[in-house]
Length: 295
Image (cartoon, rainbow, N blue to C red):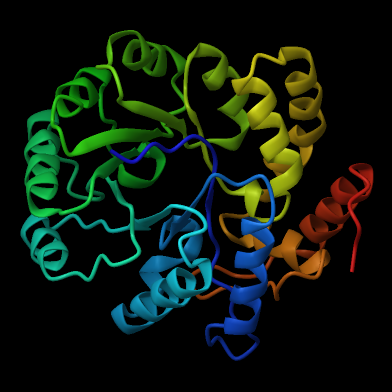
């Protein structure tokens, strides 16, 4: 069984000014992460603007990262849909070479019951040759996976972890207290990473890690190894920029940060729009306060 720990990064998809995927920037970003304190890469998640990518673009981006990575880090691929049959069919016909696990969000918009969520993920797990990481993000899906639902799904041998982004630490604690051995829990919220690890979580699938993998990875590793004071100090330093990157949507904020430090352009695809000047100035100041080198 694959063992994921520490800092996982939900990678962005860089675009150039005409809206096409910027592969030189994608190469630069991928190497930037691999050469930092990153434990695994998450490709084609929400932060990648996957809903705005065609299936052909999704496959191209994924293959590009797989080849460049060359097995240096585990790769988790995002595959999700609110159409269970269509998702299972896609998984059944998917080329998983170079992919270690699948991150799959709870169905959005349909707002299924807890039994519906269980049935959905059971079918997904049965269809997949790779282990499944559940993703609970009620702010985007419109429904919350209760702790009891996660714990029921955790009994499935092909469901190995959850990315928990409910923001409900009581719910997270219930999962951590009662989960089976080997089932992993990852924060889906950068700002809650430290308290979740302190309660027993295995790490985070992060947005800010795209731009600041060494700083955020250091905080994650310090927390995992019990260096609480050091982790708390870095957590407090990073809180302002973590809060700021989500003010006008994701990945608008993180792409602006990456543009400021010279990793990629800040272009996003509609319905997202670039950051306002006010936010850009705020992010610039956050980076200056952290003594980050600015391009």
